[in-house]
Image 1 (cartoon, helix red, strand yellow):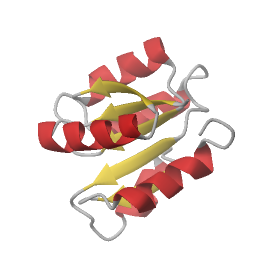
Image 2: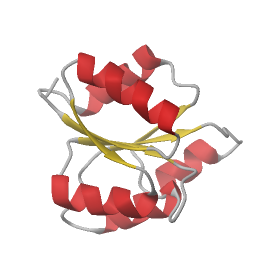
Image 3: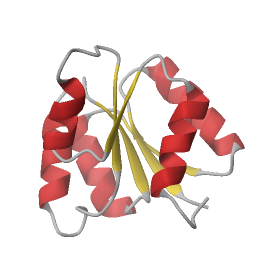
Length: 123
């Protein structure tokens, strides 16, 4: 089953999402800020990253940009997650290298469908 990195600083969001994904058979790796997200991506090589954009230490915008510039991590799909859905955020997320975008509160089935799109053959 696919390995998913959840980069989320909100404990409630992180726990809810990780539990629901684990029940679906996914292997879950956790990071709580953008810098740790980059380090975990490098060491764990997840199949997909769920990246909150409002993070401490380093935000998701910068983390996505760094990951997409590195040959070892550039091909890993990133789905940006944000609670502050502002006009232009989707475009900005795609510009920094995210492969898709979703808003919080998370509608689990919709997010799962987006994940399946990137994880063909691993779900």
